[in-house]
Length: 166
Image 1: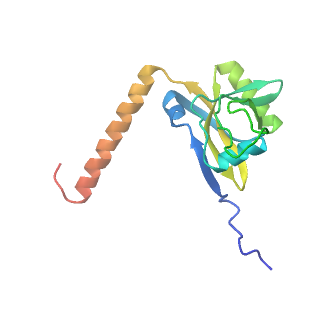
Image 2: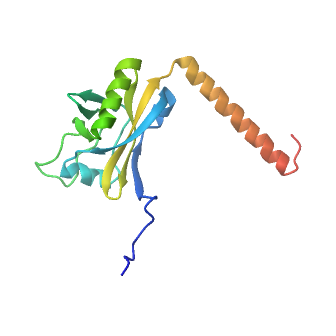
Image 3: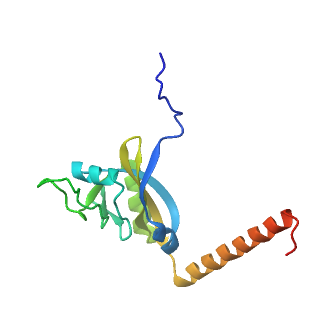
């Protein structure tokens, strides 16, 4: 007998808790990894309420392990003395091969590890970790100009398809 709540294996349930929109503006994303996070019970309860901030977050590799720094998960309101520290360092869970690849990339080419989003995937908290290169201010201006030009082109094409004059 098949389960009534069966879902397609290629589309996992994903509930986004927090996103770091500033990261895509400040960095050029080279590669993206999905990581598990080692959390305490009150942190999970706080995340289930949708409360977290990735703004200043970054990851480091220390002793063959990856750690997430400066990610703010506020204390759980109904927690007692077992509550967690909001900005504590959290261990990320990756395969050894992925960690070795990250070590090589960050050492050789000056790339950094930045969290892009924090979400629930099938009941487990995951972090989307990006291998990123910092943008210069002129790169940011070029990206903004390109985005504006693309938007203008789309508007013009929309007007033209509706039969309106430019």
